[in-house]
Image (cartoon, rainbow, N blue to C red; front, top):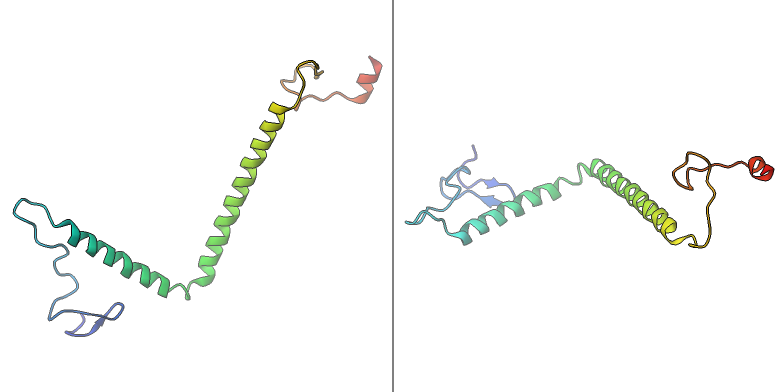
Length: 125
């Protein structure tokens, strides 16, 4: 337990004899609601302190953090590549072709992408 007047966290001092686990919220008003502004300031202060501690320790875990960031960037890049490839193929299939032309596909295939007709079969007919 820190003594009275010792430094705590980022240069903050404990007030006269209070431990860090004091009253976490302001006292409730008569109607049962707490003051919203005080709770929001307390929450923002806590977010600031936790973020500051995380940024201070970033140097110690730089390579681990960098591996995670690069890995996530690669995963997102592959996902975007696959989605753009799919959209490009769908757009190509939708925009190509003339209604006056017929496509010859092999027996049993559902689309032109699955059809395979060898040159020898085509020449014989």
